[in-house]
Amino acid sequence: MTDTADRRRHDEPEMTPLGRIVDQIKASGRRQPDDDAVAAVDELFPPPEERLEYLVRFMALIVLSAAIAGFGLLADSAGVVIGAMLVAPLMTPILAAAAATVRADNRLLARSMVTIVLGTAGAVAIGYLVSVLAGDSVSATSQLPGELAGRTYPGLLDLGVAVSAGAAAGYIVPRRSAVSALPGVGIAVALVPPLATVGITWQLGRSTDAWNAMLLFLTNLAAIIFSASVMLLLAGFRPRVRQSRRRLATRLAVTLTAVVVVAVPLGVHTQIKLEDSRLNLVVAEVVEEWDPSAQVVDLDAKLDDGRASVELLMSGPNEPDQIWTLAEEIRDRTGRVVEMDVRYQQNARFQVTAR
Image (cartoon, rainbow, N blue to C red):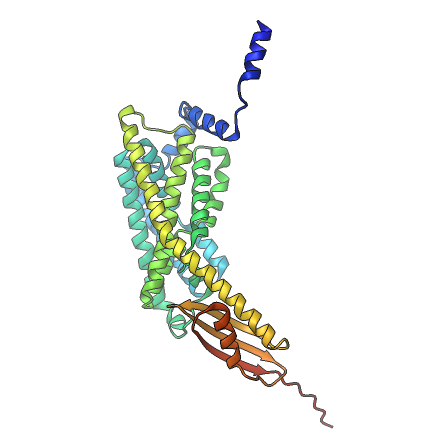
């Protein structure tokens, strides 16, 4: 009997890593969260008698965090912006929306989304007001501060951060022992700073930058809800009524579709960034070959409507010679029309003695 059982086990094919993952997912479909995990997730939803108080507190924190973020963005202070992320309360209703999604509870989902919309509008309005009060220094220049500009051109890396952060949040919420890590998720995926950026750039008349900053927020919103919902499902949360499970699949499909939709412009942005990076490398190489003694002080090269637009500041000990050959070499290497704005600073050294 033992020999037969051993032979049967020997004849069975060894399970692949993918097969083990599939088995774990199937097992999670039978898993039930314990009472403590259920209570932790329930805390995302304020009880009826506390909704008004919760909403007032939520909007007060939105106003304060958006103001901190707005002034920090204009001051180009990363530390201040991080502080705004810690104050921002938007993660709670977003996780509540994820929990309502896996429970297929339309009422709780609607309340969570209304809270998110109110917070979104409030943060944008405060960003606009901050720009009215302190945005003159930015409007007087063509360059946005680095912290502000960094939130006006999101790419696929931002989507990856949002998916990972949402998964981390979905893992943490039902586990009280890990709740101390939740502020780290808030720092990793910025929610209020992009909204403050929308208000600031809107007030400055930069509609494209405002749209891109809103795209960053929508990316974070869709990705967090989707990945947090998946983690809550794996933790055993699901609709209490079996008939609601079909609605759950529909909601997850809608959320995933939203993630895919925002991924399209993010992919375009990422491709443009990669092409601009390659162009910058080509320009730097051409300058080094043109005059090894010249030093690139500032370089901004980008593709614009099929043309290579290059702004270059160089310094060197020699008199510049035949700068037009730089444009021709870049044209030959890239196959594009090149428009260059070159400034050359000749280094001069003086030694003077006065007696």
